[in-house]
Image: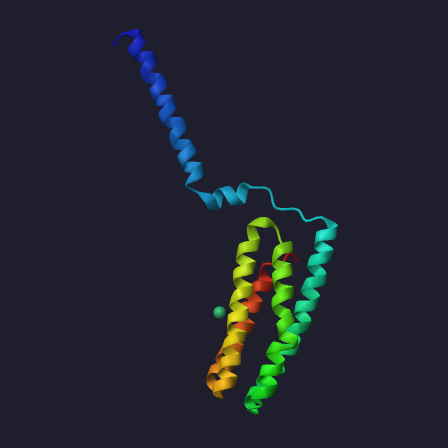
Length: 154
Ligand code: ZN
């Protein structure tokens, strides 16, 4: 091989190596996320998150009243409860989702939507006087609410 070809070949090898390593980095988002710096909340942000979390926890505790209402087939009370106190839950969860770090917001919004969908289904179950459907969605709502809480910084 003439010297020019040898140089060209080594340059080509180098380019291939660079492309390969770039591809490796890009194709491993989990690795990239791990090596990324953790998001740091300001004290103000944390305070706000804490306040919203407290409100939502309070509403979660009040949700424990629902099974008794379902058990006793007090459907009007179930509906009043979902539209009243739990109506606030949607607003508060949406607000909290927006105060989280950017990359968490979509997941938190989706979790909040899940909770709310189950509350709508409890409302439907109350209309249909369907105890099984009401209980099932109550349990699902609590599960999804816990998933939402998992996203909140300690
Ligand atoms: Zn769900």
